[in-house]
Structure formats: structure tokens, C-alpha cells
Amino acid sequence: GAAAESGCSLDEGYDYILDYRDDRATNDIPDESEAIKYGFSTENAYYIGEEALNRMELVDAELCVASSQDCSMHCMSIVEANVGICTCSQTKGLNTPLKGMIGALAGLCDGGECIDWDNPAIMSDSDLFFQCESWNKISRYGDDVQWHAWGWGLTLFRASRGEWEFGYHPDRDLSNLCPDRSHYDRLVIRKPLGCNLEKGYDYILDYFDNKTSNDIPDDSGGIRWGFSTENAYYVGEEALNAMNFSSAELCAVSSSDCSMHCQEITEANLG
Image 1 (tube, helix red, strand yellow):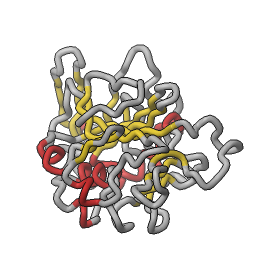
Image 2 (tube, rainbow, N blue to C red):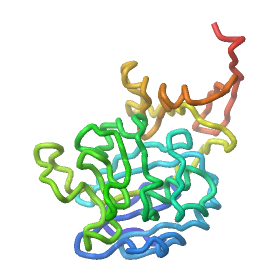
Image 3 (tube, rainbow, N blue to C red):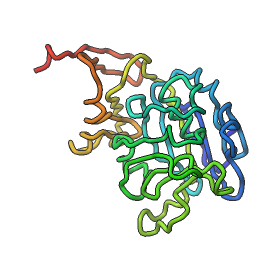
């Protein structure tokens, strides 16, 4: 798709699935689900559409919110293990649950049966600022909203607010809750290039250690219930307990050549 014009260039090293920059004075995102489903491109926004998304080998992606004012961007990983089952009819053509959730985040759903993302592993990432109060939930919020982060957080309106389409909820003064966030006006979903995770697995954790950033929480409490940063995630206690398995694989990977070495772990070989 065409790049969204904002003066803020997108990082190299990614395939971009959608990029929505909400110019408050123009209609950037189509008003109808059908016009989004198969892909679109306007001056300020694009989505690659169902066919191109289905062709992608995708087991994880990054969900980002950005500011066209200062070009800051905050991202987190999303994987199959921390998305819900999407039954929204407009996403039925997407061939994995993760892609269905991406379609819902793109604004496809007209009903409330898809976005119901009550997951601490997603919403507790304070660096992402999805919410202004700690509700830890993304869902529909009334018939006019495609999705909303509870707690006066980020919201996608396809049509009901005119040219106001994405950003922090416009109906409340946020100065006492999360000041200096009204300029976050851009939604990006992207797939990192380089070393891709293999399909056919449920991923419990993926820790990439960027030597110049703090990727993993410093205390146990920050890990236990799940977390997601730009370079690492863990599904958390609740999601892990919901899994039914008798063995797993422990792997070490090189980011320089993408080599991976794995060892099976079972109940029998645990201490």
C-alpha cells in the first residue's frame, strides 16, 4: 500500500499489514467493512486486505501505536496464544485466529462477537499506553465503536464520529488520567522480517535480548501474569494453565544467522 504521509518514516525490516494515520480533518478509513476487507489505500491509511494477509506466513506480529506529532512509536508482540477466537462474520475468510484478530483490529467487525481481548498479557504493558485506567480489556463499546481499550483508552471509529477515527477516546478530558497522549493518532500492525518463528507450534515465550534495551521485566510479578514488549513476551500463568500438553521444546536461537537448536522437555526429565 501507499505510505501514510505524516513526516514520520516507518522502520525498515518489517512487512506492514496496516498503517492508519488519522488526520482529524479527513475521512481516512473506509466507512464500511466491505471496503476494508479486500484492502484499501488512501492518502493517510492502508490495509493489505484478506488475500494478501492470508498469503503471509504469520505466527506473530507487532501491534503499534504512534504519534504523528513527535514520531514516537510503542509496539508489542501479538501471537496466537494471546488472541481470542474471532467469530465475527467479516473475518471468516482469514485463515488463522491471529489473522482474524488483525482483521478485527483493522475495523472489519460490525458486531461485538470478535473483539473481546480480556488478557493481562496484552493490556498490562504500560509502555504501550493502550489505556488510561487499568481495565485490561479491548472490546466493542457500543454499536458505533469498532473497538475500544477500556479505561478511556485508544479507540477505532470507522464512521460514527465523522473524521475522528483513531486515538484516545474523544469524550473525556484525559489531562488528569494520561496527559500528553492526545497526539497518538496512528495505528500500525507489522510483521518483523529476519528470523521468523516456525508455523505449527503454540509459542509460550519468545525472549529476544536486544543488548541496548530492557526487554524482560526485572521482577517476578512483572512476568507471572504475562507480558509483551517489543522484543519479548510470555503468555502468562492463566494462558499456560489453559494449555494441554505433556512435552515442550526449549530452543536457543541466533539472531545473526537464524540458526535454532531445540531440546524436548517432559515431565520425566524435570528436576
